[in-house]
Image (cartoon, rainbow, N blue to C red; front, side, top):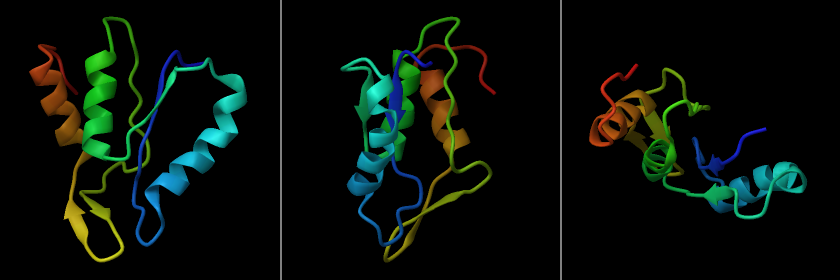
Length: 99
């Protein structure tokens, strides 16, 4: 099990991102220690937070978007690349090796 879980939105399209996150957390809440989960709807902030909280030897898994370079909302698609966000957070955090 993970020590910390950060749950965020992927492509909410017309759905309420907070409702999606709440449904995800219902499935894991019984197995998690209180306070170990973070709900951060803004995907950029969620990825950055996960990387900022990591330490040497930790594994950060960013799942959901893969190769996609946009985030779909009800009325538009915003440019967004998990890889670019992760690289920037790693660089800002002083990590010298980024994938």
